[in-house]
Structures are given as C-alpha cells and as structure tokens.
Length: 118
Image (cartoon, rainbow, N blue to C red; front, side, top):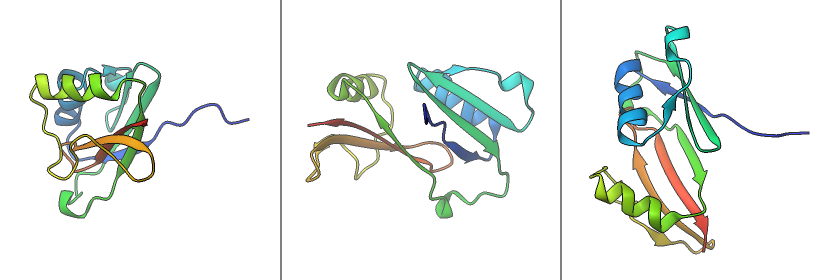
C-alpha cells in the first residue's frame, strides 16, 4: 500500500535552497545539518527533498512538483502579500482540467505548481 510521496529535486547550493523554502515559503528544515549534500523540508503534510547537483544548469532543469492545497486563494494571496515571485505565466487561474493553479520557480528553476480542484 502506498502512503505518501516525497519528491527529490536538484539544488546547486544548499544554503540558498534552504533559505528560499524555509524563510520565504515557510517550510521547516527537518534535518539539513545531518546530511552535507541533502536537504529535507516539510510544511503541513508534505515533504520535499533536495540533492546537491552543483553542475545543474537552471535553464535546462525540468524539475517539477505539483502540490495540492485546500486553500488556493489564501495561499496565492499570502505569496503575493510576502512578495514572492509568481511565474510570469503562472498566475492564479482556473485551468481547462478543472483545477485552480498558480506556479513559481525556486532558485534552481524547479517548477512549483500549487493547485486545488475548482
């Protein structure tokens, strides 16, 4: 039986990635000091893991995570209120597939899409 999934995304610099997720998006570091080249962050019921990939070219990074939420409007407004950078093509909108979504890029160009059933 499957119970959860924790995506693993590439990062070029652990401190920059940690700062973005912890200080800007409100995640909690759950063990960065234990692993030199690995980072784990958690918020509410999700975790995202990162592995060090110093040679990553952000222009060629296709890392993506789709995060479901039960308050898309509140999350989007909190991102705007704290001046987070929403992807130019990813402002909150209802998609043809019945989801309300918005997107942003992290410092390594991993695409974070947040969605809720419309």
